[in-house]
Amino acid sequence: MGRELRRKEAKRSGKNVREVQNKNKEKYMTPKSLVIILISVLVLFGLTYLFTGIFATKDIKLFNKKEDKEETVSKISNKILASDSLKQKDDVYYVYYYNSTEEDNEVADSIYGINETVYRVDLNDGFNANFVGEPSGIVDSIDDLRVSDPTVIRVESGKMVAFYSGKEEIKNIN
View 1 (cartoon, rainbow, N blue to C red):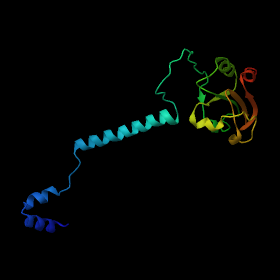
View 2: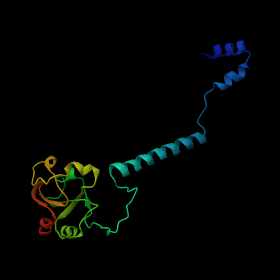
View 3: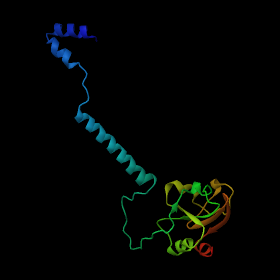
View 4: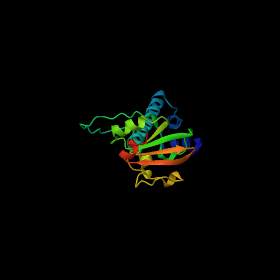
């Protein structure tokens, strides 16, 4: 409806023409509404971060079950995804596949004793779930790789050359 039609309609119905015209003016953003919008956006980003941290990457533990087990701290700091196992820049390196909730200290100490670079892959991470299964041995393609907890592979020039599965094999690497 145009301005003139609104004015005529207001006259016919006996309303004050100026009040009808003032009610229809655009309202500009006030500082209060700007603050509300900014807070809403920040809360949305925060909830998205929490959702991905809890369910997708599992980096945030919402309900920690307190157990009597010693907390293991891994000495290997290069954490990667299983799909990047054959794509690292080093010519010779090892990749250690383990479950972070059940990491064995003896195996971790054996891995720490290796002189080459060691990358670690957490099998408990949701992104690495499709690589968990019956150990496949040495494969040409990373898509064919299946590992169990714990497993170590040796990579030279982007090709897998050795496959160690189980605690006893890993302890005898050196």
